[in-house]
Length: 145
Image 1 (cartoon, one colour):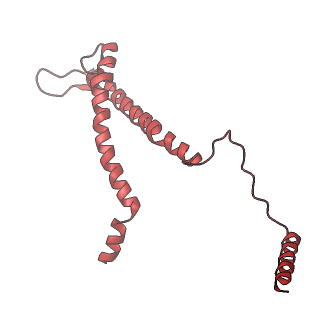
Image 2: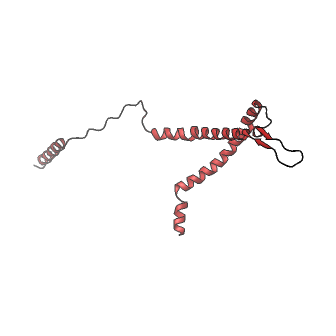
């Protein structure tokens, strides 16, 4: 039972997945900082709001009597999440997908698209091989005599 677990854990794809989760968590912090520090203030300025996540449409204001909470249609949070998603997707595409597709098409040491096709080595026909064998046997017999 432990042997199967050990094999599962030591598989390359499990380790790759763990690394991807750790890198993704760190990358999320960077993107969140970028969205909250740069994009949200610019969009909040455009829509005249103090904070983009606070931007929205008030459907029912908070009552002063404390009887009920206000209802706000917070479209600013949706826009903020959408911007964050688009940033992550853009970075993943250009930092991971494009280079991997390039390497898949043109691995290191492979020829470029403009390079001519290398000529395949000429494969001798059966008759040429038999003629060569005959000539070698004749040469060997003449050395022995």
